[in-house]
Amino acid sequence: MIHSLKHTLQNNPQMPKSSTTAGHIVLQPLTTTLPYQVYCGLTSQGQLIAVKQVILDSTDTDAAKKEYNRLQGEVELLKTLRHINIVGFLGTSLHQHAVSIFMEYIPGGSIASIIHRFGPLPERVLALYTHQILEGVAYLHVNRVIHRDLKGNNVMLMPTGVIKLIDFGCARRLSCIHHTACNSVDLLKSVHGTPYWMAPEVINETGYGRKSDIWSVGCTVFEMATGKPPLAHMDKMAALFYIGAQRGLMPSLPDHFSENAKDFVRICLTSDQKLRPSADQLLRHSFIPTNGTDTNSQEKVKNKCCDHTKGLLLN
Image (cartoon, rainbow, N blue to C red):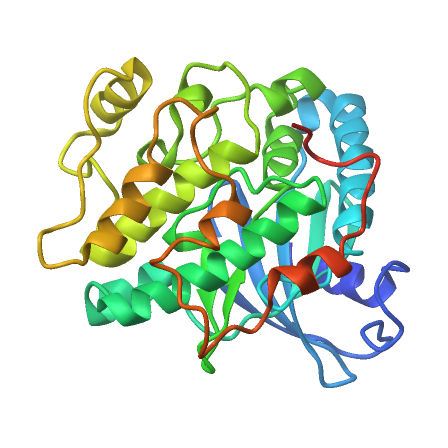
């Protein structure tokens, strides 16, 4: 796999000229989360890039290649997205049954790893990070992209305190490539993500839209505040049934948090997605700071909107 990845990095025509090299590339495995392997690559131009790679299911090569072609189209859309709170996409490559997606390298750890090292976040830091997560989500939604798998592991923290969202949009497509059992209908109506962060409509397979991301935002804020997502005391299947049944109340933040923080999480975890607020509305919530690290106003988000007519999602 290392050899094929070197070939891919050196010969991928989709990579920017500044990242395409004919010389040696130093590779360092970062994580292995089946079915993915993630590498950090150092190009001969001195640039660090992240490479997510998955091996095609060789039992149905034609179907896998069709999925790869769809993935390629989606990444072309994602490459047009430019926002400080969104990881940048560089391109894709298919070589010897290995699919690679090239992305901006984020040197900081995930929010989940930060919580593991330092414990739950104080409310002021929680609010600052939540603001940036919302800015990224709002930008994706304006551009007709839904994340589909928001959680602490997919929220990265730069050393400067800047939040970056990763693993959005085409993450489901990569899973399809690996299993070759998905179609376009499955993509929009699929139980995808980690159960503790999944919205009721996703579990019940009644459709995944922008508001499903908002539920996951609420769960991620709860995770940052307490160290664990809501219902973490239950096993995964029990949590799945509890959320899907929509009969029980979701847990609230502990008493030492402000009423604003509690209310923010409560409205994110509204069972009826029609009553759930949008990212734009949440940015105006009293829990969200209006100064300090306001790196991206909603006006900037709207101005940079790409207005794709075809995209990953579509509510």
